[in-house]
Structure formats: structure tokens, C-alpha cells
Image (cartoon, rainbow over all chains, first blue to last red):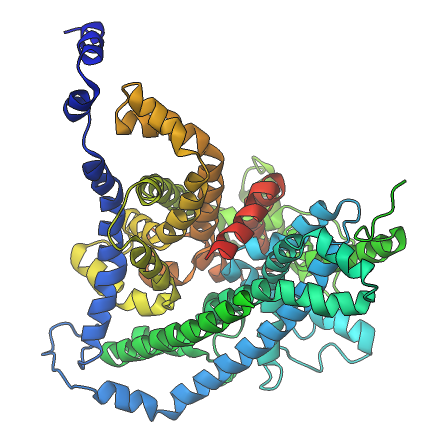
Length: 315
Length: 312
């Protein structure tokens, strides 16, 4: 049968019959469309997650697959919660989280506020500011170790230029006091634009008439800022903090390249510690339990935070 | 001229503009320094004070793409004159080119895995997003939320079982393995973004097409896809950037045949210490496409970032 005959036959049949014959039902189409995605997620997200939970109750070591695997109950979890190294890594993570969020919110919001003054060419400059967050943290982080070199590094040179200190007198990556801050600086440089963009979306969502009404009521600019701008942007800002918080809790690539967890273990954050346990010491069961604890922590904190966020939104 | 209370005064604009431009210039310094370093000779790159003006050289790029061996002065003198500029640069350092380096292959891996996983996640993501947008799927909201929440796992945590699973299936250090993995990571975001774009397309168009005798597939293919093209394109950019930049999975699951550029570039070592111009050259070649992309496609990208975030 030629295509034309098919078309003629098709157009002659009633629509309902035609749909049954020529096409699949909506339900079948829905499953065909969603199926592969669900399958992929089950295979590469859900199944590994369940496997991790299972492993976390065992003493399995991935570098010795032939050893007999024993179920040891909650012992991995008990050991982790009493392990001082783990608590130190959580402290390092908390320090990093707090200060990166602090600086990113402060600088990000200020920049968004300034950009929202709509000066000429603001979208071009916004794009330039956004560039760092588009780039590979590993590659960029690796290059920052060069900028942080004590004698020859550009960063030390600039600091010495402005403060008069000898550029070889301080090591950003090598000293216990400065290493955590060296990471905070790079992360702030990379991710402030993200907070800025979200804040900018928030600022642009405030309709002009609110300010006009405030102006008629003779509210001062300062008052307008604190009673209109800040409350209206707050939900956006909190969202930005949520995303950055989750991302930085998982932080791995930047820190591996910058300090590798050193000096000593000052900057050994949760992810770095986890990698060491899992892929260097090969304590697979133990590290699986740690992974689950981390996941539950992020998930729990995020859920509480989202509740708070919804309250802010309702107001 | 009408007076507006919300329009900032020209002095405010000027001050705001100056501050933003200042920040933008400072933020660019590390990136400019990477590019500048890539055109320095190794001695210039580590001189004190850091050199801003220097004689540009392609030594970094030559070192990036070649492996070299040191030869004795007698041997060097006996060689025929250098055939091209690369050999000339290498001979000046009393070395000869021994062969190509691994960088080309690693870069190609990044391209294959990046584009492969982007294509797959956008393809599957568009289908799933269409279904989530148009059909009633049981527990759709929970499903979508759960899909997203898997992104909260630290990559290392997922890497343990994936490493074990891939070892069993023989997918460790293969292109296919990495493509599937990046697709799985990207697809949640892809479905999320695309669902938003497809929700915006009026259903009436497809319904009209269905009445005209199109099947669902035809209606999807001929009516919805062209309308969603911009959304699909900007989703693709996000997936590509993620896969291009990814490091944690790459460093844990690949070591040779399928290793991408991010874990490779930091390991470039020259003679007697790190070869910073070569590292910078690799970084430049790797980062520059993304930068050009970002500037060219800024409208879609910036919209996508805030759009994806604000809807969640």
C-alpha cells in the first residue's frame, strides 16, 4: 500500500478507532516516555543507594572481594559517631560552610543590588562576573595553587604589594591558620555570582508600584530598603543559601586540588575524609555508613530549612 | 521627561556601575593570569616579581601536546635542522620531541563523554518531561522530588557502590560507563528544567493536532519539539557544562582509556617540577570554550540558572 492509500483509509475511519489503530494510547506513550529515565535512575541512583545502606552494616573491603562478608549490625555507625577524626572533619566542613555562605551572601546581594541600578552595559558585566562559576573547579582550583605560591604566586605578590609584607613570609596553602581561608577565598570567588544571580531575580521580581506607594507614604529610602527590598528578596536569598549549602557540604574537587585536606588534616572536610576511608584505606563498609550519615544529615538539615523557607514565603 | 521614583539617578548609576566593573575586573584576574601564563616560558612563569610584560612563547602549548627527552649536545648538533616551530622550541631546551602526549586523547574523552551524556540526558529528559507535563502519572510530585533529592548525596558516597557495580559489569574506565553515569546525574535537572519549558507551551496546539489525526508521537515530534527548542538548547548547555567540569567521579572511576581532562590537567609534570605554562595551556584550551559559550549564550544561561533554582 502506498502512503496515499494509508492516508485515505486513515482519514475515512472515525477518530476514536483511528487513534487505536495508528497510535498507542496516552497511557502507553506516558510509560514509554518516562520508562527509560526511571530505569536509569533506578539503576544508577536508587540501586547504589540501597547497596550503600546494605554495605554499611558489613565489614566489606572492596580491595578484598573474596573475603567473607560479615554483617556486624550498627557497629560501623557506633564507631563513626565516636571517631574524633570524623568530628574534626565535620568541624572543618562547618567552618567552610559558614564563612563561604557569609561572604557569598554579603557580596552576592550587594552586587545584585548594584546591578539592579540598571547602569549601561550591566548585562555584559554580569556575564563577566558569572564566568568563574561556569568553569571546572578542579582545573581552576589547581591553578589557584600556583597563584598561592609563597614567593612567585600572584596572590602573595598582590597581598605584599598592598600590605608591605614579604611575599615569601606566608603560605596560604601550607600554614595551618591560613589554609582554611585559602579555600574560602577561592570558593567565594567562584560561587558569589550564583548568589548574585538569584538575588537579582528576586530584586527584579519586586513590582515598581510597591516603591511608588511607599514614596507616596513618604517612607525614607532606608526604610524602603529594610521594609520592602530585604523582605521581598529574602525567600530568594534563602534559596540561594540552600543550594550553596548543599553543594558546599559535598565540596570535594576544589579542596582536593587546593590543599588535598592538608596541612595535616586541617582542611580535611567530610567528602575528603570519606574518599580517604573508601578509596585509600578501602574500608568500604565503614565509609558506606559514613556516606549514609552524611546523606541523612544533609537531607534532614535541608528539610528543616525548606520548612523555614516556606514560612518566610507565606508571610 | 517624566519623573520616576524607582529609576535610579544618574549619579547612583555611575557609582553602582563603577563598583560592579571594579569587581568584575578583579574577578577576571585569575582567569587572565591562566591565559597569560600559558604563553610564558617556564622561567618567565616562575620569576619574581610576577611578569606582566614578557616575550610571548608557545612553549607551554608545545609541552602540553608532546613528550620530550633530553639529549646530549653532540647528539643535538648531529640532528637535521628542525622541521617546524615546535621542534625549534624544544631544541632550544636541549631536548627532542619523543612523541605526542596524552592530552589530546584526554581532551577527546571529555568531548565524547560530554556530548554523549548531554545528548542522552536531553533526549530522555525531554521525553520524561513531556510525560510529566501532559499525562497523569501516579505519585508524580513525589517521584520528581525524590529524583532531585538524590543530588544531595556527596558524589563520593554514590561512587562506592557504582565503583563496585561497574567493576562487575566491566564498565569501569569506559566511555559508556561515564556517559551513563553523567546522564543519570544530569537527568534530574534536565527533567526539572524541561518540564518548566514544556508547561509553558499551550496544550491547545497538540490537541488541535490530535484532532487533525496526528498520533501522540507525531504531535510531540511536530508540534511540541519545535516550540521547546530554546528550552532544550539551554538545558543541553547546563548538562554539557556539568559533564565537562565534573571531577569527583572522573578521578575515582577512570584512570586511562576514558579519563577526562579535569583529572588529567593537574597531573601534567615537566622536567624538574610542575610545568606551569603547560598546565595553563591545558587549562586555557579546556576553559576557553566554556567562557566563549557563556558570553555568547548569556541570555539563555542566566535565565536557566535563576529559573531552575527559583522554581524548586
